[in-house]
View (cartoon, rainbow, N blue to C red):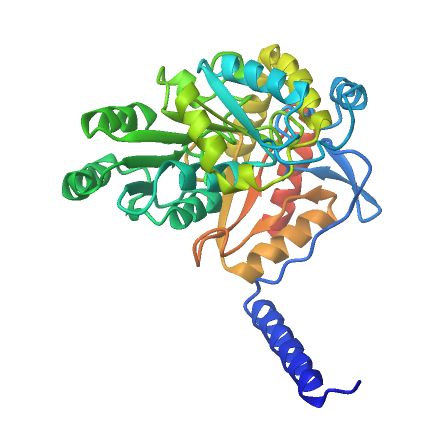
Length: 394
């Protein structure tokens, strides 16, 4: 049956969508994914072309490791069939949770489908209206969204500024029943670390919980790769770890006391109302954990590559902020210039994705370099040579 009003409504909606896309394109913010054929690694086949990959979070190069593939293939099956609180809890999940909790030296852990779900669900589960969260200004979007979803009062402190945080705690902590300081341990777009020991001191002084997202530090820093909290000799009240970065797999976990994890299991909407992660992913996480614990040489290589790149790019005149991590932002500022440089690198066989708003603040677009432990020195040299060529042309 022809319904003119319905047809015109659909057309109007489509026009609005097209207009929104045009706005993104005119602002230099429209993104389109590249296709990778074959496994992730230091060299990838991108849209049919072999290139060096320097923008992956596969820090230790484990994404295509045969041990992970074998563990996934030998698991109890592919799908979990239901949420964890119905029939979705399988032996693989519980074994992985026990091993991961032991890895970060806390009593318990709960697996989530990914880091975004873990952060959004956990914060929403632990604080609510009438409580307060104190969040670093450059926290990951998933942490920000978790704070918003919780309906707690949100107080944003200047990036890594513990004096500003303390002033907010003095002003607002007493008004809240429960409070939580929320931070990344290693900030994913800037490559700098949080002042974790000072944050832990403030959390103790103001009777406030401390949640640390170790997404980009886990596997790279700390004893056997157990993260920056371990390196700082603190145990946060809640630790979030992801399995899709240095661990080379998929999923995430929340680690804390038995009571805290139990509350998360019962209140985190992204846990309660989601199908459990595949048991194959849990088995792969166990295999990855064994490799990560023994990867001290790979960690050394990764950070050596990072240091070489940081020095080489600065010598060429590029703005690379101070840092000691595997994440190197090359600050450009302008969106279009950032993407032109990214395209210029790709023409020379080096894939470094441009990062633009809203992932970073307006006017701070950048190229985000992330080497892998499995890159060779010749790869590092090729990247520096490619940047040198662009510097000469610009």
